[in-house]
Image (cartoon, rainbow, N blue to C red; front, side, top):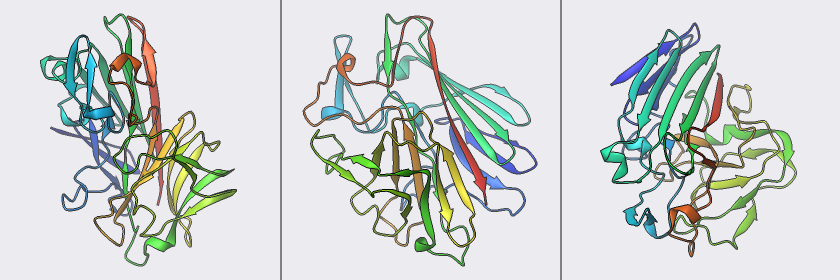
Length: 295
Protein backbone atom coordinates (compact mmCIF):
# COMPACT_ATOMS: atom_id res chain seq x y z
CA UNK A 1 0.00 0.00 0.00
CA UNK A 2 1.22 3.48 -0.84
CA UNK A 3 0.40 6.51 1.31
CA UNK A 4 0.71 10.16 0.29
CA UNK A 5 1.03 13.33 2.36
CA UNK A 6 1.61 16.86 1.12
CA UNK A 7 1.92 20.52 2.00
CA UNK A 8 2.08 23.62 -0.19
CA UNK A 9 5.51 22.66 -1.56
CA UNK A 10 5.97 18.88 -1.64
CA UNK A 11 4.03 15.67 -2.11
CA UNK A 12 5.64 12.64 -0.45
CA UNK A 13 4.64 9.06 -1.24
CA UNK A 14 5.75 6.18 1.00
CA UNK A 15 5.31 2.46 0.31
CA UNK A 16 4.35 0.24 3.24
CA UNK A 17 6.74 -2.34 1.79
CA UNK A 18 9.89 -1.30 3.58
CA UNK A 19 8.39 2.01 4.76
CA UNK A 20 10.29 3.35 1.76
CA UNK A 21 9.81 6.81 0.27
CA UNK A 22 9.12 6.27 -3.43
CA UNK A 23 8.34 9.80 -4.60
CA UNK A 24 9.04 13.40 -3.62
CA UNK A 25 7.19 15.67 -6.05
CA UNK A 26 7.83 19.40 -6.32
CA UNK A 27 4.31 20.83 -6.46
CA UNK A 28 5.50 24.11 -8.00
CA UNK A 29 7.23 22.55 -10.99
CA UNK A 30 5.90 18.99 -11.13
CA UNK A 31 9.47 17.65 -10.96
CA UNK A 32 10.08 14.21 -9.45
CA UNK A 33 13.11 14.46 -7.17
CA UNK A 34 13.57 10.85 -6.02
CA UNK A 35 15.06 8.13 -8.23
CA UNK A 36 12.28 6.02 -9.74
CA UNK A 37 13.89 2.58 -9.35
CA UNK A 38 14.63 1.56 -12.93
CA UNK A 39 15.41 -2.16 -12.43
CA UNK A 40 18.03 -2.06 -15.18
CA UNK A 41 20.08 0.35 -13.06
CA UNK A 42 18.99 0.12 -9.39
CA UNK A 43 15.56 -1.07 -8.30
CA UNK A 44 15.12 0.95 -5.10
CA UNK A 45 14.28 4.54 -4.15
CA UNK A 46 15.29 5.30 -0.55
CA UNK A 47 15.42 2.12 1.55
CA UNK A 48 15.81 1.83 5.32
CA UNK A 49 18.88 -0.14 6.40
CA UNK A 50 18.10 -2.21 9.53
CA UNK A 51 19.16 -4.12 11.64
CA UNK A 52 22.56 -3.68 9.99
CA UNK A 53 24.20 -1.70 7.21
CA UNK A 54 26.22 -3.23 4.41
CA UNK A 55 27.18 -6.88 4.19
CA UNK A 56 27.69 -9.06 7.31
CA UNK A 57 30.88 -11.04 7.70
CA UNK A 58 30.54 -14.33 5.85
CA UNK A 59 27.05 -13.36 4.69
CA UNK A 60 25.61 -14.73 7.93
CA UNK A 61 25.46 -14.33 11.68
CA UNK A 62 25.08 -16.47 14.78
CA UNK A 63 22.66 -15.38 17.50
CA UNK A 64 20.84 -17.08 20.37
CA UNK A 65 22.39 -20.41 19.46
CA UNK A 66 21.28 -20.35 15.81
CA UNK A 67 22.75 -19.33 12.47
CA UNK A 68 21.01 -16.84 10.18
CA UNK A 69 21.69 -15.83 6.60
CA UNK A 70 22.37 -12.14 6.21
CA UNK A 71 21.71 -10.30 2.98
CA UNK A 72 22.93 -6.80 2.28
CA UNK A 73 21.55 -3.99 4.45
CA UNK A 74 19.24 -6.13 6.58
CA UNK A 75 15.59 -7.00 6.05
CA UNK A 76 13.50 -3.95 7.02
CA UNK A 77 13.48 -2.72 3.42
CA UNK A 78 11.89 -5.97 2.18
CA UNK A 79 8.96 -6.51 4.57
CA UNK A 80 5.60 -4.84 5.15
CA UNK A 81 5.28 -2.07 7.74
CA UNK A 82 1.92 -1.27 9.32
CA UNK A 83 0.26 2.15 9.19
CA UNK A 84 0.07 3.72 12.66
CA UNK A 85 -0.97 7.28 11.93
CA UNK A 86 -1.63 9.47 8.92
CA UNK A 87 -2.28 13.19 8.89
CA UNK A 88 -2.20 15.90 6.25
CA UNK A 89 1.57 16.32 6.48
CA UNK A 90 2.61 13.45 8.78
CA UNK A 91 2.81 9.68 8.31
CA UNK A 92 3.91 6.97 10.75
CA UNK A 93 4.60 3.32 9.88
CA UNK A 94 5.77 0.55 12.19
CA UNK A 95 7.47 -2.82 11.98
CA UNK A 96 7.27 -5.18 14.94
CA UNK A 97 9.13 -8.45 15.32
CA UNK A 98 7.06 -11.30 13.94
CA UNK A 99 7.45 -14.84 12.66
CA UNK A 100 8.92 -13.61 9.37
CA UNK A 101 11.52 -11.31 10.94
CA UNK A 102 12.57 -13.87 13.58
CA UNK A 103 13.60 -16.23 10.80
CA UNK A 104 16.10 -13.55 9.75
CA UNK A 105 17.04 -12.03 13.13
CA UNK A 106 15.88 -13.64 16.40
CA UNK A 107 15.21 -10.50 18.43
CA UNK A 108 12.14 -8.68 19.70
CA UNK A 109 12.04 -5.09 18.45
CA UNK A 110 9.90 -2.23 17.22
CA UNK A 111 11.06 -0.06 14.31
CA UNK A 112 8.99 3.06 13.71
CA UNK A 113 9.27 5.36 10.69
CA UNK A 114 7.80 8.85 11.09
CA UNK A 115 7.65 11.20 8.11
CA UNK A 116 6.88 14.90 8.47
CA UNK A 117 6.81 17.72 5.91
CA UNK A 118 8.00 21.20 6.84
CA UNK A 119 8.12 23.62 3.94
CA UNK A 120 10.53 22.11 1.42
CA UNK A 121 12.02 19.69 3.96
CA UNK A 122 11.18 16.02 4.53
CA UNK A 123 11.96 14.83 8.07
CA UNK A 124 12.30 11.04 8.37
CA UNK A 125 12.72 9.83 11.96
CA UNK A 126 13.60 6.23 12.73
CA UNK A 127 12.91 5.00 16.27
CA UNK A 128 13.97 1.61 17.59
CA UNK A 129 12.44 0.19 20.78
CA UNK A 130 13.43 -2.83 22.86
CA UNK A 131 10.22 -4.38 24.22
CA UNK A 132 11.71 -7.34 26.08
CA UNK A 133 15.26 -8.35 25.12
CA UNK A 134 17.92 -8.35 27.89
CA UNK A 135 19.91 -6.23 25.43
CA UNK A 136 19.10 -5.15 21.87
CA UNK A 137 22.01 -4.20 19.60
CA UNK A 138 21.51 -3.04 16.03
CA UNK A 139 22.88 -1.07 13.11
CA UNK A 140 20.88 1.43 11.07
CA UNK A 141 21.16 3.87 8.18
CA UNK A 142 19.45 5.74 5.33
CA UNK A 143 19.92 5.26 1.57
CA UNK A 144 17.98 7.93 -0.42
CA UNK A 145 18.63 8.33 -4.16
CA UNK A 146 18.12 11.70 -5.88
CA UNK A 147 17.49 12.22 -9.59
CA UNK A 148 20.11 13.95 -11.70
CA UNK A 149 20.32 16.02 -13.76
CA UNK A 150 17.65 18.37 -12.44
CA UNK A 151 16.70 19.27 -16.02
CA UNK A 152 17.70 18.48 -19.61
CA UNK A 153 19.96 21.54 -19.84
CA UNK A 154 22.49 20.07 -17.39
CA UNK A 155 24.87 17.11 -17.28
CA UNK A 156 26.76 15.19 -14.60
CA UNK A 157 29.73 17.57 -14.45
CA UNK A 158 27.40 20.49 -13.65
CA UNK A 159 26.97 19.11 -10.11
CA UNK A 160 29.06 18.73 -6.99
CA UNK A 161 28.72 17.45 -3.44
CA UNK A 162 29.14 20.43 -1.14
CA UNK A 163 29.98 20.51 2.59
CA UNK A 164 29.26 23.44 4.88
CA UNK A 165 32.69 23.12 6.55
CA UNK A 166 36.18 22.66 5.17
CA UNK A 167 36.73 18.88 4.98
CA UNK A 168 39.41 16.32 4.17
CA UNK A 169 37.03 13.35 3.94
CA UNK A 170 38.78 10.17 5.08
CA UNK A 171 37.10 7.05 3.70
CA UNK A 172 37.11 3.44 4.87
CA UNK A 173 37.10 0.88 2.10
CA UNK A 174 34.93 -2.20 1.71
CA UNK A 175 36.41 -3.18 -1.65
CA UNK A 176 36.17 -5.51 -3.43
CA UNK A 177 33.67 -7.69 -1.54
CA UNK A 178 31.70 -5.23 0.59
CA UNK A 179 33.59 -6.12 3.78
CA UNK A 180 36.03 -3.96 5.76
CA UNK A 181 39.64 -5.10 5.70
CA UNK A 182 40.80 -2.78 8.50
CA UNK A 183 43.82 -1.48 6.55
CA UNK A 184 42.50 0.32 3.48
CA UNK A 185 41.81 4.02 4.14
CA UNK A 186 42.05 6.91 1.70
CA UNK A 187 41.31 10.63 1.37
CA UNK A 188 38.59 11.36 -1.15
CA UNK A 189 39.84 14.96 -1.19
CA UNK A 190 41.81 17.34 1.02
CA UNK A 191 40.90 20.74 2.46
CA UNK A 192 37.83 21.35 0.37
CA UNK A 193 34.16 22.19 0.62
CA UNK A 194 33.25 20.48 -2.65
CA UNK A 195 33.61 17.09 -4.36
CA UNK A 196 33.05 17.39 -8.14
CA UNK A 197 30.57 14.89 -9.53
CA UNK A 198 31.80 12.90 -12.53
CA UNK A 199 30.56 9.78 -14.28
CA UNK A 200 33.70 7.97 -13.04
CA UNK A 201 33.38 8.89 -9.36
CA UNK A 202 31.73 5.59 -8.42
CA UNK A 203 33.54 3.24 -10.78
CA UNK A 204 34.88 1.41 -7.71
CA UNK A 205 31.60 1.63 -5.77
CA UNK A 206 30.68 3.95 -2.87
CA UNK A 207 32.81 6.29 -0.77
CA UNK A 208 32.29 5.94 3.01
CA UNK A 209 33.40 9.14 4.75
CA UNK A 210 34.04 9.08 8.51
CA UNK A 211 33.70 11.74 11.22
CA UNK A 212 32.80 14.71 9.04
CA UNK A 213 32.56 18.09 10.78
CA UNK A 214 29.86 19.46 8.47
CA UNK A 215 26.23 19.81 9.49
CA UNK A 216 25.00 19.33 5.93
CA UNK A 217 26.04 17.62 2.72
CA UNK A 218 24.32 18.88 -0.40
CA UNK A 219 24.08 17.90 -4.05
CA UNK A 220 24.41 21.27 -5.79
CA UNK A 221 23.84 22.42 -9.36
CA UNK A 222 26.83 24.72 -9.70
CA UNK A 223 25.55 27.39 -12.08
CA UNK A 224 22.10 27.85 -10.51
CA UNK A 225 22.65 26.94 -6.83
CA UNK A 226 19.70 24.56 -6.88
CA UNK A 227 20.32 21.74 -4.44
CA UNK A 228 19.21 18.78 -2.38
CA UNK A 229 20.64 19.09 1.13
CA UNK A 230 20.85 16.40 3.83
CA UNK A 231 21.43 17.18 7.50
CA UNK A 232 24.26 14.79 8.45
CA UNK A 233 24.99 16.17 11.92
CA UNK A 234 25.60 13.39 14.44
CA UNK A 235 26.24 10.65 11.86
CA UNK A 236 29.66 8.97 12.20
CA UNK A 237 29.55 7.68 8.60
CA UNK A 238 28.22 9.31 5.44
CA UNK A 239 28.36 7.49 2.10
CA UNK A 240 27.95 8.79 -1.41
CA UNK A 241 27.12 6.31 -4.17
CA UNK A 242 25.57 5.72 -7.54
CA UNK A 243 25.21 2.68 -9.75
CA UNK A 244 27.83 2.42 -12.47
CA UNK A 245 25.37 0.50 -14.67
CA UNK A 246 24.29 3.71 -16.39
CA UNK A 247 26.39 6.57 -17.72
CA UNK A 248 25.85 9.42 -17.63
CA UNK A 249 24.77 8.99 -14.01
CA UNK A 250 21.02 9.13 -13.45
CA UNK A 251 20.96 9.42 -9.65
CA UNK A 252 23.21 9.86 -6.65
CA UNK A 253 22.76 8.76 -3.06
CA UNK A 254 23.67 10.56 0.16
CA UNK A 255 23.62 7.92 2.90
CA UNK A 256 24.02 8.82 6.58
CA UNK A 257 24.79 5.65 8.59
CA UNK A 258 25.23 4.85 12.28
CA UNK A 259 27.06 1.56 11.61
CA UNK A 260 29.42 -0.07 9.12
CA UNK A 261 29.55 -3.30 7.08
CA UNK A 262 31.13 -6.43 8.52
CA UNK A 263 34.86 -7.15 8.51
CA UNK A 264 36.62 -9.64 6.26
CA UNK A 265 37.85 -11.61 9.27
CA UNK A 266 35.34 -10.30 11.79
CA UNK A 267 33.21 -12.24 14.27
CA UNK A 268 30.03 -14.00 13.18
CA UNK A 269 28.43 -13.61 16.62
CA UNK A 270 25.84 -10.85 16.56
CA UNK A 271 26.68 -9.67 20.08
CA UNK A 272 30.30 -9.03 19.04
CA UNK A 273 29.43 -7.04 15.95
CA UNK A 274 29.94 -3.24 16.28
CA UNK A 275 26.54 -1.61 16.63
CA UNK A 276 24.87 1.77 16.38
CA UNK A 277 23.21 1.49 19.77
CA UNK A 278 22.48 -0.95 22.57
CA UNK A 279 19.11 -0.80 24.33
CA UNK A 280 18.06 -2.20 27.68
CA UNK A 281 14.47 -3.49 28.08
CA UNK A 282 12.00 -0.65 27.63
CA UNK A 283 14.55 1.74 26.13
CA UNK A 284 14.26 3.47 22.75
CA UNK A 285 16.62 5.29 20.38
CA UNK A 286 15.92 7.70 17.53
CA UNK A 287 17.65 9.35 14.61
CA UNK A 288 16.37 11.79 11.98
CA UNK A 289 17.36 12.48 8.40
CA UNK A 290 16.15 15.90 7.26
CA UNK A 291 16.34 16.49 3.51
CA UNK A 292 15.63 19.90 1.96
CA UNK A 293 14.77 20.19 -1.73
CA UNK A 294 15.76 23.71 -2.89
CA UNK A 295 15.17 23.08 -6.56
